[in-house]
Image 1 (cartoon, rainbow, N blue to C red):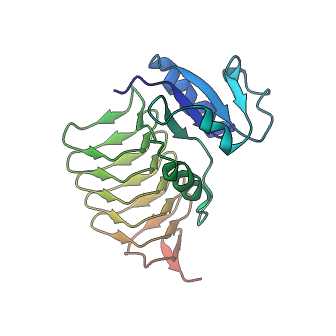
Image 2 (spheres, rainbow, N blue to C red):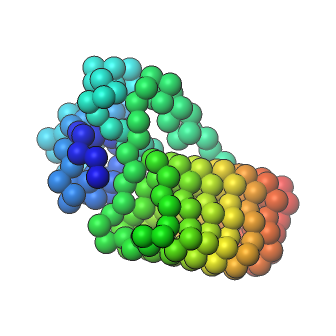
Length: 211
């Protein structure tokens, strides 16, 4: 594990979850960059508050790692644009894996991914760069999760599911085995995906609706 100091991008609820994980791992969180007031969250107490993206320039890319804690909305690429901006300046994003997540030694976690509390990642699975695997998610064997995916709390992806980029799987959703979800596909909360989903399409409940 890299022990460089960490700068958090974003000051909302997702940031509080990530900081909680990092502090338990004895990481040094030295600053939060957010234009919003962060005083309402006790977990942020004592962490330096910076307000502009450009404030990162006071730290050398060799001195710190970044963690993108900006929340995710379906089809939004805001988080990706933020990452690309910082990456263009030479900074790197930490991979965050909660200590109580279960990640197979035979799974591959790409840089910048976030694996949160009690998530389970089985053998043969690849988690793409900057994807978020949220609380209590189960990713079964041999899944291939693309970059910038958001898999919401309690979702289950059965074996050999393949997703493109910017896929959103809602809370408590289930994806049955051997399906593909194209770029920017959405599986809504509680839905059961029973057939592959073309790019940009949405699955509601147990059927697919085209927009």
